[in-house]
Length: 496
Ligand code: ADQ
Image 1 (cartoon, helix red, strand yellow):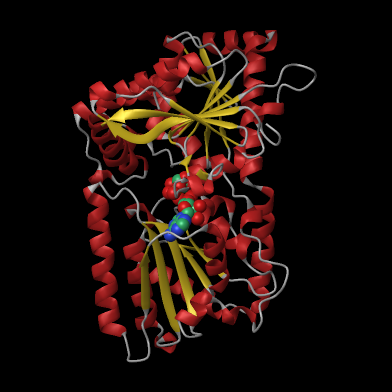
Image 2 (spheres, rainbow, N blue to C red):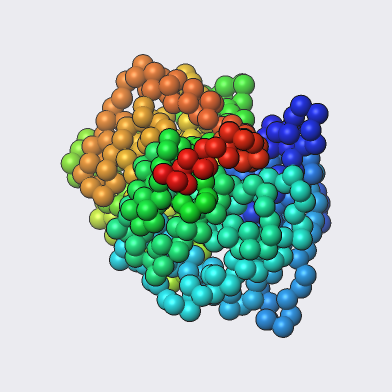
């Protein structure tokens, strides 16, 4: 690819084709937008698309988003968008219920984010998850060509490499986990923690957002499987895998402020008008219990109670995009947020002040970028998050001469990447409230200084760079596996 995988062959060798596999894929937009992709809201799709952009001849394979009766499954549907071939596989209604809503969203998602009490494991759903991996592999295998680099994404497809190997695919397969990888005690909640880890070892390269996730993964492999570690490599019974940290980024150009400065400064922005020129705290998230939205509302309430000087001078705008609406825990979360907004507004509102505005909807990126610029304080306070791209989008969108302050959860992967943010513990509303108070009072000079450092990091660690680094390492692992050096290393590791 122009800025990623497809040029990796280099040196006159044929270029590798990049094959991305993820649960959800972009779909075709209505005819009026022919040739454009409808990208699902969420971090994975936006980042993968940025990594693929400009690539020629790559393939993106996943679930089409449609469900049909078991006897009515259509063959995989292929569409082409600007050089990317997108192939979508239908699932049956039972698979959608048991694999996607069930095992993926109701068991793996809370488990990976350390929400032990929310983990809902069912034997039949785990069996369905395994069956879907087999179906994905069977549909994908005939599409693979020698020389392809296969890059699998996220927890929906933990077992895919093993299934592809069983079908005879010997080429390189990489895996990137977009969520955190949990500590050993939490991982062992799975019905088959060893089996899942062994399956992960079938990938040639696995990548995580953070050092903590990598450490958790390596510890699990050593402790549960007796794997051996040498530098970045893990070995177990004839298999050698490389594991590393690849922090995901954004495409900062999508959020860059326009060259001309707004008339009347940023005080003229749409959201600033909505809060009538008051200081603006802004939260933008998928509606998910990992994002800490209720805790953020409590932190806002705490701010007003502990710092009455901010009463009527600051408003919180919380934008939450609808997500996984078929899962009962998400509906519950929505109700909880609505009732908290209602209670806090009921208790704090004045005739001329609405403390919290809550918008349950999605916005196009350009509009989000303008909203980000309207904010005085960006509130990115997930209880746990693999990375959190919104934090990086906020940074990229700011005007350097008058940037907002980023208040960031210590439990977002982004905290490893963006240490100049004001870091808070989102489980403790009083701690978040103090972080917000600091941010609101921060002098312009300090705001600019922190923002300069944050922006430099966001511009260095883009989605492009993330894709390029991961795929270069995958190509290197594949090349090494064929060379004598790798054979020697493999033999040494395998013998211990
Ligand atoms: P998500 O959990 O979806 O991603 P995040 O990284 O914050 O979380 O990405 C959310 C994306 O959705 C952002 O690009 C944001 O702009 C967009 N979005 C959020 N609210 C929106 C709204 N109201 N309207 C329109 N767009 C909205 C998962 C992991 C993360 C990891 C990413 C990428 O959970 O930890 O950072 O994948 O690996």
